[in-house]
Image (tube, rainbow, N blue to C red; front, side):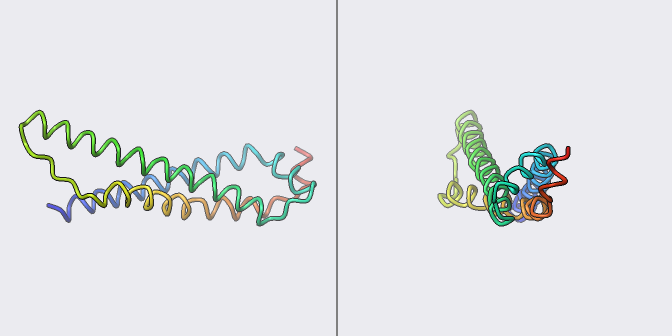
Length: 126
């Protein structure tokens, strides 16, 4: 049963990572003129990539915190309603934000790479 729940959690984490990548990519496409202006004013590609990676990582961290919080609250609520003793792994509140951060960082790699390819002159023409 634990293996099944871990597999379900892994699938949920992968879906969350794909969602973060999609959101970051759409945000990148909407902000091409801004990125072009930043590049024209002297920002290097690594600065642009770092900014997008930080945003994606923050999104993953927030998702990990929210997911762990909702999971813990639901577990305790159901256990209290059924007069059970809730059994929770104390490492969960620490691991979830960390795994969310890693998923967000991994999901932001492709959009960040795409952002480094934006040419300032072409972006400012839009």
